[in-house]
Image 1: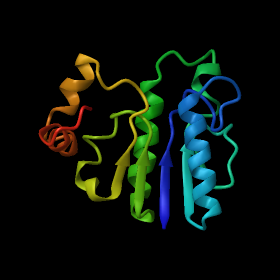
Image 2: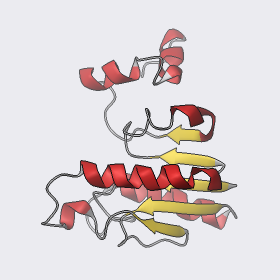
Image 3: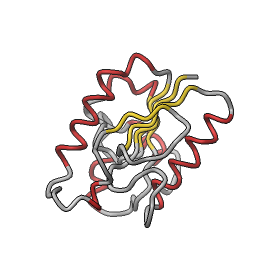
Image 4: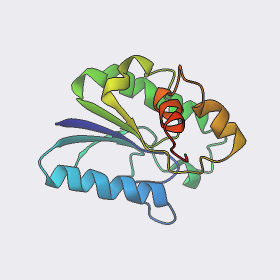
Length: 146
């Protein structure tokens, strides 16, 4: 399969310092490559991977003293993913829910792993919107806790 892994830009993949999400993305990406999948990693350009790397920021944003606002970097990354979407069978997002409105039409080809807390009121407000996140409403209706 052709798989896109879309990672947070705050740390490199794998992280040089702290970065649990980026470490998980690295392990998953490397294992998918080892299994023979064609994997493309969208991450900071200082990331190290055996997958094809699409650099979306020169360095991990947390380590760049010139970066004040992270959102423009994520918007530019999502634009790159959107332009290349037809190259992939699966798009796996690890960037919370920033991509949901932009990729709604590709719901059958997307996977989202939410690495943070999902019990916060603001997060629940977003996830309970059935037009954005139908699987959340389905899971809640069928007894899932989160």
